[in-house]
Image (cartoon, rainbow, N blue to C red; front, side, top):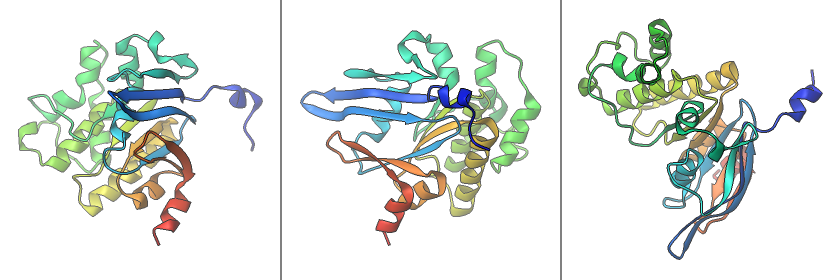
Length: 235
């Protein structure tokens, strides 16, 4: 069945409009315009230092653009109050800091800060899907780097964001756990119509997660390309 006219009329879940970022005399992003649909997964690749992580920070207003803007569901993100933006758009940086305490206290942090009901059962199910069964009462100081990374992912997903921004989401994981996390991300994108933007150094992973990728050239330029072409070029 094709998409309805109403669906075609909906604005993209995430859209950048001439997004530009400069530091001193260096242009990190030069007028980047991209649209990401509801439930779409988009990879971000390019050389180290090309501005990929900065791009994610701009999308959630941790950094302010030099020019241009970002829209979520057609709304300029400057019109959203910070708490609403943080709930709708979840960012998981490469080094995610957990708060002292248990896994439960971390995973349920968002709802508790907003004085919303806490669904422990949903949190447990999410941790199980991420390969962390029986961990709710563990102190986070006992977690490995890979376990902590997955707890940070669960903490963000519990907020039920519209958009998930990931910076090297499987960098600390072994191959089996990496496959588990990739599978969960793909499943959640489909189940929740979750829009995902994932920075990765691994072109093969980009191909597993997404149909398209933003390719950063390191000089401010960004091109959108099919991941199949990028993967094929490596062979």
